[in-house]
Length: 89
Image 1: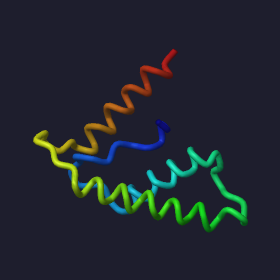
Image 2 (image 1 turned 135 degrees about the horizontal axis):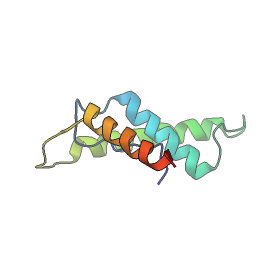
Image 3 (image 1 turned 120 degrees about the vertical axis):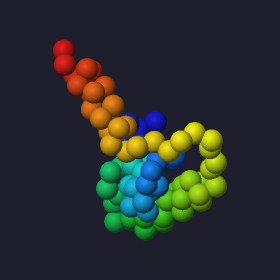
């Protein structure tokens, strides 16, 4: 999985449409092998981003969990600590 795609489920506040679209864009970039499509592929690329974002939003709406929602700030701090440990050497 691409490292730039972040978990969006079970956060407080819930993921925004912008976060879902950003994840969809990263996914489509990854599987297409292109960060910016050619003019010939631009329409197909944007349609794929829209479709992946819509499917992802539906998935997030339908998922259920008994775990308490995660705090974004706490999770970000954990990620920074992991990165600091990884790149400290």
